[in-house]
Image (cartoon, rainbow, N blue to C red):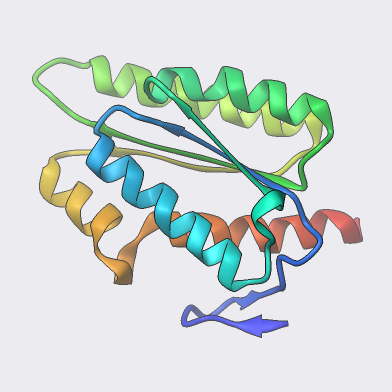
Length: 156
């Protein structure tokens, strides 16, 4: 078992298979989430061939790909990443709710951990803090959660 800077234990990712499904919309931020998630998995021992990254146009498209991957039985955990920034309409809230509901149903249906870090944020400043700053990077947090959940599921 490895220890990270956060308080929860982090297990080795060696021998586990992960998928990262990320929207390209708000690409500067989503790219940073993917980079940090991949880095955290690699530092924890995941081999390059054990991490599959699939990019989709936006947050709304993430669940359909996550669903296909989860039903394949090929992954120990799936990380869903994306960035939705609120605008003047309720569109962002509708997308955020739809993605959350879909990812929850997929995880329950297939008994595969789906780590939901499709972020619904109020503005670009929040995106900067959660995606570009190492201290609060949600890509890193998603990877560490995926590793822990993969181990937990193996013990059940």
